[in-house]
Image (cartoon, rainbow, N blue to C red; front, side):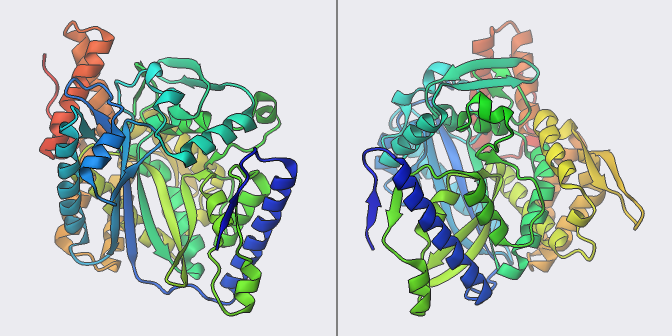
Length: 499
C-alpha cells in the first residue's frame, strides 16, 4: 500500500481528508475490539532507552550520525537531537530471570555503543536531562538529519504560529524562548511496554496512571536545564512547553496540550484513541491507501497507519499502542514517564517495580482507580516531578472507609507498594532472586532518600561550595556521574563528591 504525503503544506482540504481517514481507522479499531481479533496474552514486555552523547569534558557532542555509522546495529537509532541516540530492546517474556537477562543485554549493548562513541570523542550518558546542555545547543541546526523530525518541527511550529516559551519555576526559574521544538530533545526517557489483551487494557492503563507519581518520586533524574536547578524531574514541564501547539489564547481557553496526563480513568483502549481524534488536530500530512473497513470486510486485519501516526503525536505519559505483526493485531501500554539512568541496575529496578506493581494493582478486587480521584493522581504527578523522593502523595488508605490521605512517597513505597510489587512479580513467575535484588534497589533508595536527582543536586552544591563556578560545577558533576554510571553500582550507593 502506498502513502501520500502532502508536500505543499497541510491545507484545510488535506486536514478534512485526513480526519475522515482517522474516523475510518477508529471505526476499524472498534470492529477489531468487538470481534475479539487481537493476539492473546503472552506476558511480553519491551523497553526503549533514549541516550545522550557527551565528551570526556562532560559537554554535549552533536555526532549521533557518526556514532550510528560505527555502531551499525538496527537496535540503535537516531533521536530528535544530534546529541541523542535510542536503543530498542527486543521483547522479553515476563518470567524467570528476565530482569537479570535484560540487565546483561543492556550492559553489553550500551558498553559497545559507548566504545564506538569514544572513537569520535564522545560517550554514552544515561540521564534524564544532560546538565551541561546550554540554550545554544538546542537549536534547529542541531536537529537530527531525518526528514520526519524536520516535518514534525515544521508542523508544530506552524500550528503554534509563534515562538515556544519555556518558563519553569522550580528551585530556580528558567525563562526563555525557542523558535523550534529542539528543546524537547533534552528529555531522554525509558519507555516500558507491556502487551495486554483488550479486556485487561483499561485496568492496566488505569493502574499505570495511578503509579506514575510513585515512579517519578523514586526515579527522578532530571533536576537541571540550561544551568538552572528546576524540578527534581524537569522533563514533563519541559516536554509540555517544547511541544505546545497552543498559542496563549488557546491555553487560556482550556485547550488541551499535546503532552498530556489525561483527565479521567478509562473503560477501554478505544476511549484513548477516540480522545486523540476529538481533542487533537492532526500534525503530519501522511495518508495511506488502505481502506480499513474494506480490509475487515474481506477478513483481513488493517494496519491503521493514520491512527498509529496520529497517536504518536499525542504525548501521553501512558500511551495506548496499536501494533500489527504478521497479520495479527495487538495492544500495548507504553509507559513513558521514567527518565533514563542513572545505571543499568537502576533502570532494570525501575522496570521490575513498575511491572510488579501494575500487575498487582490491575488485579485488585477494589481497584485503586475506584478509590483515588483522577484529579489526585494528576496532582500527585505534578508533586512528584517537583519534589522527587521528598514528595508527599495522596493515596487511598487501607480499609473500606479509609478515604484518601497524604503520605510521604518513600513511606508509601516501603509500607504498601513494595509488597504489592513483589506479589505482582510472583504472579508473573519472576524468579525470587530477581524479584528480591531489583526491588531491594528501590527499597534502599527510599530508606536513604537518594535517587539520581538528589545525588545530582547534592553533588552540584558540594562542587559550588568547593569554589567552582556554576558552569564548572555542572561539568564536574556530569563527569563524575558518567564515571559512576559506567562502574554500574546503583545510585543509592554512590559516594558524595569531593573536590
